[in-house]
Length: 153
Image (cartoon, rainbow, N blue to C red; front, side):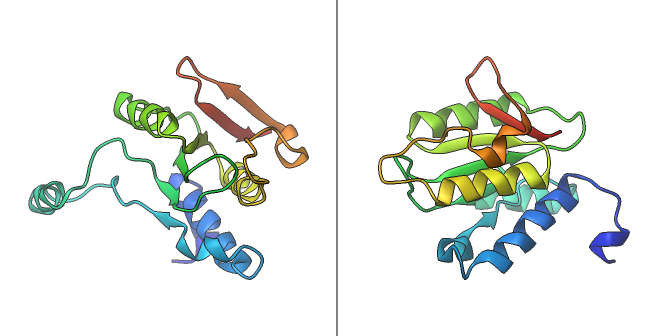
């Protein structure tokens, strides 16, 4: 099934982010190592048990870029779509990763995630993430745990 034929969802938004990253590797070589962590999705019982035994953990963010930029050690993005919200385990993971000096955010669409990744990979040494012109036109808010949420307008 082609992406254009699929109904928009968290999955299609993540696919768009990863396809963009593949196209932009020449500009930002570290995007070669941007990856999706397959913790979600429905599986049969035996597969779910096997994956848990292999170390799959509830709450781990969807996308990770394991490269330091600015003052951050890496980037974690939890993808959501529509009215979906983070779970308690996801908020706990994001808070812990933020406490370990990673850049973390919840992005509600591909455009927001792409804008965030571009800003992240161009951070100056010791720089911190601020709203750049590519994120200014987004609906940005911080939740009670001080986790940034970004959604295209």
